[in-house]
Image (cartoon, rainbow, N blue to C red; front, side, top):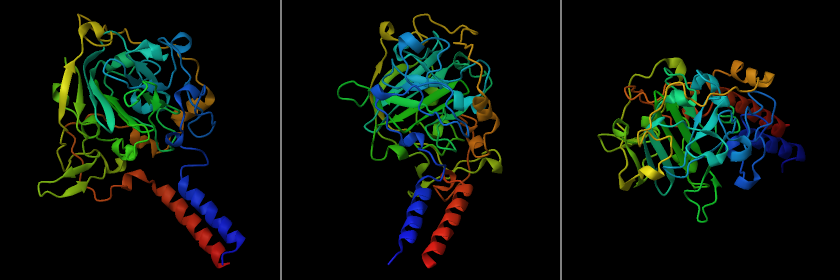
Length: 376
């Protein structure tokens, strides 16, 4: 029979297994009803924290060009948000932790995407997720014009998310039209293209549907759409559920899972498969009089230099350290977006990119300690 000491050691080992990233709750584990949003989700002043912006946003109190709201929404073609940068001329890779919400609708208390900035957008609703894909002038969201971009998601190397404390809500699956939190989503920005995918709240495979480990291969391989034909298109469709990211059926009919190579191996130059874009139907073009001002319709065009620039408050020491002290693991999310010509190499272990070697080493140490206690 195990001693009390041995049982305690096993319990601590199990805890270490659950929290390999640190002694705090992962952002994707935090369930926060919309009407219970705190001022800041992440107040932990360690690592990359605390959070740069805030979450309890209202149009009256926080809305406007200087908003630091880090709560986003994807509800419909006419009402969605994208993650942009707080000050002009930055890159996604350098500032993803501080990214803020830019929305087509001002009611959310965020920054509003400037008139004519979005030159094409397609909203697709499936039974498991919703997505919006399109083209835009990314300088309108303070992203440097030549930035190939990268991914924002609720994970990050430290499980604090990018942006830190960033929350996502949607009414697309709600029976009473009330916002529901989605804990799994992904948003790529870069090369004047965007894609955002939000999985059904508490869906049984939501994490797999909105995977975050393919951050080096951009929109085309994460949020499936006909990117070559999105410009000047503003439509809302119903769609079939696609394969999980990284999963593909080869010419031999066999189903395989691609493993993204480590950034240390250099640029991705080959890919073993072509994405299969799911079918869509019942597409409806947005009515011009109902289109948000962000859409390049009715003669609206984006005026360069009219981005929602911010006179962002002076950074705190921890915020500065957030960018300066990012680990090599965090740097893997600083990636080129929408590399349609990039072709990654074949991999065999679908989980290799999701579990850091340092974490594995820690678990081995913990396992050895637990075994030692049991033997004692």
